[in-house]
Length: 133
Image (tube, rainbow, N blue to C red; front, side, top):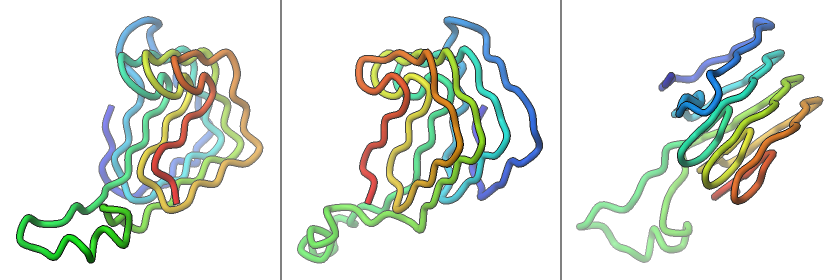
């Protein structure tokens, strides 16, 4: 499943993913709030066994002055904020990063009153945050 706009998911629910299939929830958005959701038994061949969130970045066009962008770390992150409240992540497996949750390219991440258990991956069994300001 892919979601590409700014959303708030705040209806209590449980999402159980079929074990050992590449079916983690992938979200590509500049802003999202997940609240009161349980994610169980997801699997990814790459990152984020239960949930994989990737923010958008701008890279310099070929004809632009590289120095302007290098001062900003080579990329410019959009106004991304990801918030997770009162969620439960369990049993997620990822081949590389973030067994239960993987977040990449964010300006701000807020995680409160959430549980991460029994996740496994090569790096960060529970949570892996990459390229966060």
